[in-house]
Each structure stands twice: as C-alpha cells, then as structure tokens.
Amino acid sequence: MDALQELELYKEIVNHQLNIFFKDRLREVQDIDPYASYMMDLLREYTLRGGKRIRAALMYYSYKLFSKQNIDEAIKGSIAFELIQSYLLIHDDIIDQDFLRRGKSTMHKMYEEAHLKSFGEEGSEHFGISMAIVAGDISNHLANLLILNLNMPIERKIKAAAELNRVVHRVLYGEALDVLSQTKKKISESDVMKIHTLKTASYTFEGPLLAGAILAGADKSSLKILSDYAIPLGQAFQLQDDILGVFGDEKKLGKPIGSDLREGKKTLLIIKALHEADKREKKIIMAAMGNPNITTEQIEDVRAVMITTGSLDYSRNLAKKLIRKAKKSLEKLKGDKEARNFLEGIADYMSEREY
Image (cartoon, rainbow, N blue to C red; front, top):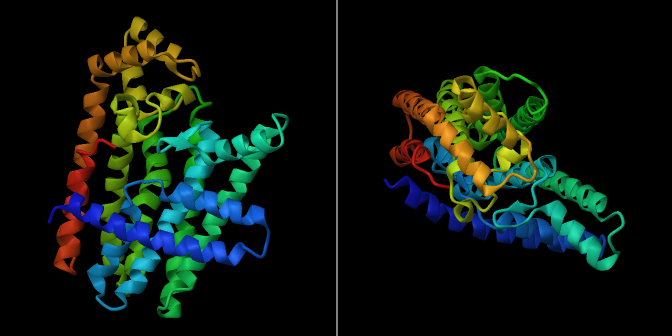
C-alpha cells in the first residue's frame, strides 16, 4: 500500500466531512447572532485550508484495524482530531506570535484585520487575540460534542471522549513547557523529547489511534501496542518538523522559515549545535535566537553551523532510529492487514516528508 496516496484519498473524504459538519454548525448558530455565524465561518475556513489530515486518517485506520462495522460513523468521528488541531493551532499561533498559517492569516490576525476595517486601529490587536481564543475554545468544544453524538455504543463514546480530553490535557502541559523552555538558559535533550512527547506525539499520533481503536472495541493489549508505535513516531515527526522549520521550503510549509529561531525555541537542532559549536559559531546562533528581525543571511549562517557541528545529522539519525522503533512495535499488532500496512507506510513517510 502507498500510504501517502491513501492519505491523499482520505484527505478528500475528511474535507468533504468537514464541509458537511460546518454547514450544520452554521445553521445552528444563525439564531444566536451574526457574529456567531461569522466566527463559525472563519473557523470553517481555517480548518479547511489544508493540512495532511493525518490525525483523521490515523483515527479511521485504527478503527478499521479492529472493526468493519459502522464505518460511516467512524469517518464522521475521525474529524474530531482535526477540530482539536484547529483549537491548538489557533492558540499556538497566538503564543508564537505568528501571522501566517498554511499560507494565510492566522485566526487572531484575521480578527485584528476585521477590527481595523470596521472599528479602527485602537484595540485591534487585543480584539484579535481575544476573539481567536474564543474561536479555538469553540473548536475544542465541537470536537467533544462530535464524539459524544456518534451513533455508537455509549460506553465506547465516553471512553473515546475521555481519551481526547486526556490528550488535550497533556498537550497543554507540553505547550507550557515549550514556552518555559524559551526563558530557561539551559535545556537538555531529554527536556526537548519530553515536550515532543507531550505536545506532538500525544495528539498527532497516540490520541487519534487510541480513540479510533476504543470506538472499535479494541482490548488493552492492542491499545498498548498502538501507544508503543505512536510515541516514538510522534517524536520523530516533531524532529523532522524542527528540521523543516529551518531547512524546508516556505511555500510547501505554508509558514515562514526560521520562525523557531525568531521565537527563540531551543530545538534539538539548536541544543546540539550549541554543544558542539566554537565561539564564533555560538555567536552566530545566539544572534539569531529570539531575534524578531532575523535576516535570510542569518538563517543561512545558522544552517551552516547546524551542518558543520553535526547537529542536523544527529537529529535526522535520531528521527530514523525512532521510526524503526515505532515500526518494530507493529510486529505484535493484529487486525486488518490494510490498516496495518497504512501504519507501516506512514512511519516510512515520516522520515521523508517535506512539509
């Protein structure tokens, strides 16, 4: 199975399902206020901009691993983690002070621009942030309602909703640690990997996989195997994301290259480079870290340091090691062959992705 091709096919299904979902939500809020409809429409546009839809696909295929019944409801349920994705990204964009998401304005920037157009400049930034926070919270609420309203056994829905909320809880602690890491003078590799586990692996891989399997009625041993697969794969995903954030293509990523440097994020790339760098190289890195006015030339210089110090190779090799670990865990997993092949293929894709 070509997992990337399957992912693209399922992406179309997810986008269709999201369109249906938001049309229903728009009808529901019409009687509240025009501003409620406007917010829901912005949330619809933000969620439908793009993305790989990997969370929805993982939730669907983990369901399919253990059940072939009620597939239509499983597809509906799979968009829950796309709504969680929007919730977390909206808030993350505020925290990171980013103005671009998937090539367009972030939610808080869209609201700021709307304020400028209708009410003027005074208070526009605060208005944008405030409204975006609310929009993100609504997306989180909608994800929970979606799971609980599925036409599936109530005990499974409750457990799946509990898993979704467990994941969000962990992600928020990961976000807090990530913000804290930018203020600490020193941060270790284990600190970075803890953040990757909490902030990325939990909701990009583990949460969707476990929620789908729970809805399908999987046993505890199968859930354990899925976690053993998800955590190292999620860590590898974030390592690759950090690499792309410095070495990737801005058009493919849909966000500015070097944003991690501007924000002063201490990624593994940075930690290893600083550990191995000489005085001149350290000055190059420190001049770029947390610099909102970082230049293209400075980013190029940091790239060169990451290469010469071996930091880039270290991160790449660690990602590959984690992917091998994830794939190894799948050997113990029983269930639908097509779904298992998809999980194996996704693991291979993680080390090669460019966006």
